[in-house]
Length: 319
Image 1 (tube, rainbow, N blue to C red):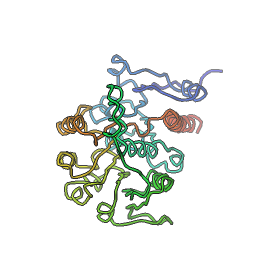
Image 2 (cartoon, helix red, strand yellow; image 1 turned 90 degrees about the horizontal axis):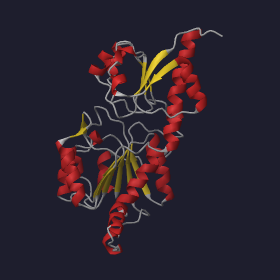
Image 3 (cartoon, rainbow, N blue to C red; image 1 turned 120 degrees about the vertical axis):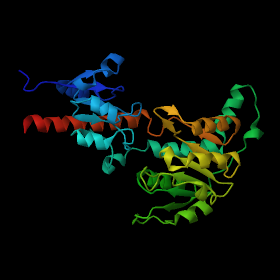
Image 4 (cartoon, helix red, strand yellow; image 1 turned 90 degrees about the vertical axis):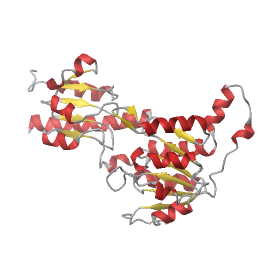
């Protein structure tokens, strides 16, 4: 049977991880190119691109991609994509943003928050490094229980609600901040109250104008010096310079983050200072955006966005 349409061209800036069945459907409609330098140079020839976090899809990039119709990205935050320019060029974005119903079953970031929490309070990374350096000293790495600690959750969306549920399983006391929450969970308190009364604080909010630098010097001063701060939201939620000073002067007990500030994928001056500080302390942990990085969640989310693309393409072809 002769094809009723001409195949489009898709540049996969990062490896596509979907089922064989869905990949077959994708190949029916798109010729797929990998991210070789030679292919990336030819941006104007592609109808679609697939990207995660390793590329900045800025205005300059999009202006070169003159024929681009689709951006496919299995992420919830689109801060690495110039969405304003994409809209000007009529580019449709397939992502996880606002896909609340689907995301209810994606638990990886919430689970990772607890991985960071336990690593920080039980000093696991430092104890591991000690053992592999042939220093077997348990008393230098005595940590803290989670039981009976007060957990303060800033942001009570999908991740915040799951963290609340997990915390209850650890017999923790839980309070949270969310001005728009109207559910039955108990413990919704003002932000300043949470900062003053929590033993552990987790940040679970989207990055926007109101949340950028939400935790600054003023807010850090409210946190108890024996409290731990954990950030699995974007690093810009916390003022990095103020954070550095607080950690340097032991104003908080510890900090763990799934992000470090970068500009054009290069560590900024303050990030380099934080890295140096982390090397000399046993209460600072950084990870390279691992929250959503499980085999299960990465597969599920890529399947979702590519299914959306194919369904959209079918409607165009057969309408």
